[in-house]
Length: 408
Length: 227
Image 1 (cartoon, rainbow over the protein chains, first blue to last red):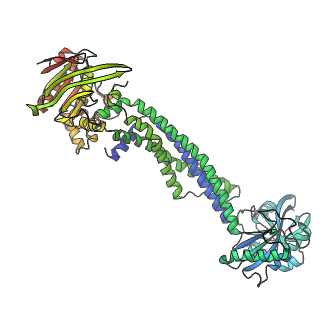
Image 2 (spheres, each protein chain N blue to C red; image 1 turned 90 degrees about the vertical axis):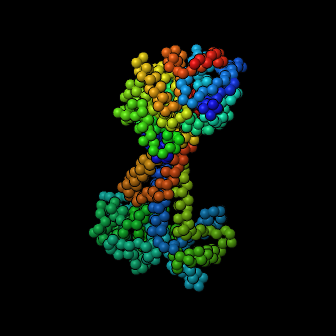
Image 3 (cartoon, rainbow over the protein chains, first blue to last red; image 1 turned 90 degrees about the horizontal axis):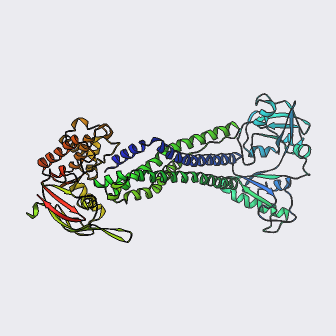
């Protein structure tokens, strides 16, 4: 019997029991749909996070105070002098620029609107490194910094929330921590990041933040941002920065009181986390696919029992074991293949809806359903059908023709 | 004479084990059947005639003894080898027709050809249905046919592979007298036309009367062979 005929016969016998076949297929649809949706959303989340980390700037390193992996006593904080020392061309030739940063949440108000926003004390170097661009207005300059000027640049979302618009807000007066600030400009949107939204922020001159807004001790920096000369020198830049700060802090070797992370470290960590999450969720979704497979096995066993006489007749007419095996395996494989195809469509739809909901809530998420995910799901669901079809098919093929014909 | 024998059976036994009890369904049966003959196997229920039919039709294997079908010893073949023999050499007509309910008459007749990997399946199935006088009803499903017509489809299915023997197990058992008579006439006509050996298992003497020879069984033994 040829393949086309087998498939045709299998479809015919499946359509004889439409409700039953439909419910069995539904089990697989839900399983495959869940797997695809999880993989798609996971991939989308990973892409979004990776993009936003890359969006912070290029070839960046972050120096944080404290050691992330072990306990170090008497650690010294990072200072502006540390940041300036990194600019030395002789001890750190791979470092292009560096800038101290301080950051904190504080009250920002315009008219009667008042909310807590992340305020960053930024030098002009920091703004250059972070590859921000402006929708309107101008950037913070060195003279703003020196004069502790009461000026602020709004992130696009911060502008939305305070003013309800993004344009025509330059020159307006807002209050940060109760003090009046003039709006200097509005940033172009950049999207979310590992540190929260980069659009829901306010930039003020570093010295202003230090003395008037966030109030840090003299010379203290929350972290230092470093830009390497090029992509190849990122790891050299990291070594050089370690060397310079180690000397300045007089910390013994192996007991650094600071931690340097590169953008790549963030990307890898983020990918690890989202990857584990995707596998975990996909695994849970996979359980429902397993349950769907058991549904197929169940219904095939019922079908074999119901059609015992038919199997006996087919054997009497010359069907070999193999012919009967193929007949039932084709049916179970078709059930799961149809379920798989519908499931892919459903999973894609779910992932798409999740993406839309995320976008509506301000987090751009493009669910990525690659060809490999589709092939994987199709192959896996068919394999599930074959695997769970083998036992019933084998049972059918092993029936004795005499007994099968006599079965009532 | 030897090569004219389509069936040679020698000292055939079949023993069933019912728990610890051994039941001898066949206790040593020997006979020959000539090609083209019409044979009736008769006997009361429990006489072993169903067991004999199953073995002659290659649905089951004997416990001991020899069985040569169309020149081939079949008593020790495997299940799949028997399937091929059934496909090529045996046509079955059952009391309860045993047609696939969802398939058309034509598809039902095509079924043995599909398992035999034969060419021109459709043409052969058509010719076979025409031979039983059902050329008008090829695309009807069994539920749309009368009992007599269904049995005709079954006969067409038995004929379609040009088998050496046709095994008819109570072929008129589920039919009224008139269509039963028609079916018997059809079977005998086809036997005349194609010279296919016809073996009828029955306990109805009026059916047995059509046969050229009657093999009577009782308690698993051959009682008489009447001509």
